[in-house]
Structure formats: C-alpha cells, structure tokens
Length: 443
Image (tube, rainbow, N blue to C red; front, side, top):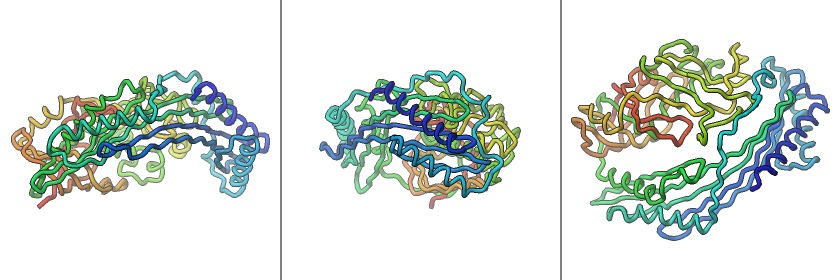
C-alpha cells in the first residue's frame, strides 16, 4: 500500500466532491474519503481455518443548503461516481427540515498544522507467516496445562488505511493509521467443570505486540483459573474490575457526557459540568496526541484541531465531549470530539490488582461481564459477571453465574482505588478499579 499515492488520491476525491457540491448550489460542503486494507488468519486445533483479505474504500459527502442537510456515500471514485453522490446529497437536502444548528465547524476551530502522531506502521506479514504466528499462539495455550481440553482457535490480524477530509472552509487533512492484533481462546476442563477464556494483544506497531506464545499462555492461564467456579450468596461487597473491564465504567461516564444525550436530556449526568461525580482525588485527562496511541488523532471528524484537556479534576466534571452540532445545541464550543473521545487517561492512586486485593477482607474480582444491563438515562447498572472471590486479601475460589448491581452515580462516588496496572489497548487507559458497596447477587 503506497501511502503517499493513496493520500493524494483520497484528498483529490474529497476535494472534488466539495468543489462540485459548491458549484451546484451548496452553501457549505464537507467530504471524507478512506481506504483500508487488511489480513486476518485464523487457526484451530493446529489447522488453518480461515484466511480473509479485506480492501475497502468509501467517500462520504455532506452538503448544507439554507441550513438543510443532505448526505450520501459511494465507493466509486470516478468523476461520474462522485457527481452522482453529490447529486444525491443535494437532493436529500432539498427534502430535509432546516436546522439552525447545522453546518460546518467554525473556521477558527479547524486544525492549522496537524501533528504527525506516528500512527502508521505496516506489518510485512503474509498469510503463511500469519498462520505460523497463530499456530504458535494456540500451541502455547494448549501446552500450558494438561487441563486445556479444547481450543476455539487463535487469530492474527493486521490492517492499515488512510483517511482524508476536506470542507468548503478550505480545510484539507489526511493521515494514515494501522492496527495489528494476536488473540487466542481456549477451553479448560477438569472433573466435569468446563470453562472458556481468551486473551489478546493489540498495537499500532507490530513491534509493540506481546509475544505470540505469551498471549497464548495468558489465555490458557485465565481459562484454567476459572475451573470449578461457583456462586456466592447475595451480599454487598467491594467489586474489583480488572483493568481490561474497568475502562467500561469510565466508558459509561464518557457516553453520559457526550453532547447528544446532554442536549436531549437523556443522560443520568445531565448538566453535570462543575459537579463532583467522582472522589476528590480522581482525575481524567484526554490526550489525543500520544504517539502510536490507539485513539490518537491530529484532528476530529470535522477537521477540528484536537487538544489535550482535563475532563475530570478533583472528582469534578470540567467539560463535555462535543461535536460542533451538539456544542451549538448546548450554546458551547466544540471540544474536537466529532467521532468520539481520544486517549482518556485515568490517573491511578493505588498499586497492582494484587495489591488492591490484599486490602480487601472480602470482595468480588470481576474478569468477565455479561449482558447489557446499563440504563444510560437513570444510571442503573446490573450485569452478569464471573471472576474470583477474595477472602482476607487472598483469592479464594472462582465465581460464576452472579449479577453485580448498583447505580453508576453511586458507583462513581464509591471508587476507592484505581490501579497502576494500566491497560493501554483501548480508547480509555486505566488500571484495575475497586468500587465499594455494590450488590453481588448469587444464591
């Protein structure tokens, strides 16, 4: 994949769509073009199972005419294809209701000199080499312990692409990115107990991936540790979320402070800016410019410059997560988050998960969440869970078939610890989290 040629081609297509829309009567126009390529290879029980290659491209055009909006997309980058998409977008705009908040981002908010964030690192791995890595991953899992009885397989994935965006304010921007992963899922069995678990590693640069064998062993270790799990009696105890699950708690917070639920008043945190939601030591930062960051971006989906900022300071909500449209609805300014948040960092105040466990007389450690029992309007939280029981600071036995419940407002206030064992694989970077006073419902 020649990044320079692709960037030039996508930029031309996006700019051509914007110019044509303006020539045909649009007051404002914006276009985004992308090209993505990828390879995914899966094995199971020592045999090649699937090889999938992917190559996609698309062009989306949005026009505004007298504050009415129309959008259309195409994968035909020819002059005729672009003209057809522009014509469709203009036609749709002629039927939509005018919206006083619609339109491009204000010119002064657009990125002037977008930084290079080192997001593109291709992995020169063909199907045969990927198969060998997947086989090594699975074999390491199967060899880890004789109680590993079966495998759901291992997968190696690699992909990369380019994004380009242009609008009628004169903004044109493009950047490439890549993402690579190795994963494994196995089943452990002993004396009638059968448990499944998985693990994965993911990074922008293939050199930042964990070793294949280590990934396989981690999947097997997790599966074996779940053997002979059982329920516990219903009670209120601290619940410890492992790092890879703890970020979901802060994901619910981010979803609640996004612009759309705020202006629709459909969030349990409506109007929370300036309110203490978390303990007074907790801090959440947004840093869109972390080199190789999984959620780094030089500009957002509207060309707005991204910037580092504080979302929570001393437990107090400092700002929302806004696009241009939602900001206008709230009579605020865009925060450069059209398309989502960028690299949220939850500051730790404690040690590793093991150290957090050691401070608990009795607690539930959650390693898997099931179901979608979260109400974004009320904050009510109820999800199936599995993990481990802690007695006197030590792991006692695996736990399954229980429900953990609370209300997110209460849960946020009851966070006692954020660990130093930070998981960097997602948009939200945080360590394990201890939440006191949750209900664990079992027998």
